Image (cartoon, rainbow, N blue to C red):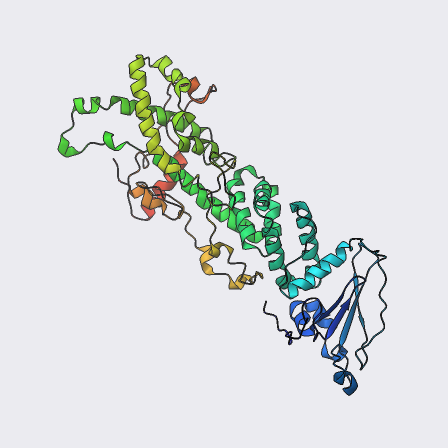
Length: 486
């Protein structure tokens, strides 16, 4: 908020004592000489105190002596309790009688918190840095919440909140790690502090943890934040569903044949280990999907997608393959060839999950360090359109109509090249997802106990859920497009 200041170019004229300040605010430990126009503009409650009719009419003698005081406000309190603001009558000489109660503060005693909060409130009006108690996040957070409560009471939130948000951000990386641990409450604090950075950070973690929250916990979110989270979660879910299908429909380029090559039995026989490796991967990943360990998991599929991203021995390693070879014995040499083909396939799969494992938070993670949920959600400025440039809430009628018309599938990756969220689902499908248009029949296949290190008594599913295919097929048919087949 722009401040209208009087002439503050006089010598030694600075906060909290401006030589031309026409308003005196007195506490037991500090006297402020400030400007009534600044106070009125920044606080609607103070504006009711500082109306022209209540200001003193200074006489010629007072003006000749350079007296400028027309208003006087006094903060009375018994210590840590809420301070009571009183207005005293100022005479034509700019003088008044003080009825200020004493806090009983001795030399060297820390001033009561309520006076610190008032000092920071007034500092914010003049764009001065806030002075918070202590360096730890807990102390800073307590002070900032108390300041926000005081600002709300005096209807000064628009002027004070941005400074509070900046004070929180000055805490640094400790703040962002705290947000990752409790994004629900921090989303509320970020909104109160009008901090887009804090709100954005909280939303990224909320979307990543969405499946782990109960409806009751989601109900604690502010309506504006919950709407963004639900929309982002829907987009993210479609992204992951399509990605699961894309990986299950992937073929290594060396396996694909052209009609002009006139492929025969020998040519396909040369790729037998590639086909076995592909079948082993699809078996494993189909189990992950069927057991709700990808997009429906509490971690949003993080643990499975991370394994695919890591490749190597993170999954389908030698001990896991022993279960396969128990039913399909091979010579040691053949087993080595199969592992080599699996490595090639794993390397190809890594590119698909790279966008999912991106880190869009403010926390700089070390090599090999991860959150326990996905943090690749992208939150743009338009997603926070309910906050205007000054951080004030925008009326519902002023919201952009585009917020209700976002594409559900705009987070879906391309089939040929992994992208960041922004590519439509159909673009991926049209690039050639195999086995997506027909609701395949679930097949009973041999259960490989070692594949996931635990036994499962139920029938394994060779493909993702039928409803996923139906949804994609219906979406494709409505748009007049048919997916290509390999």
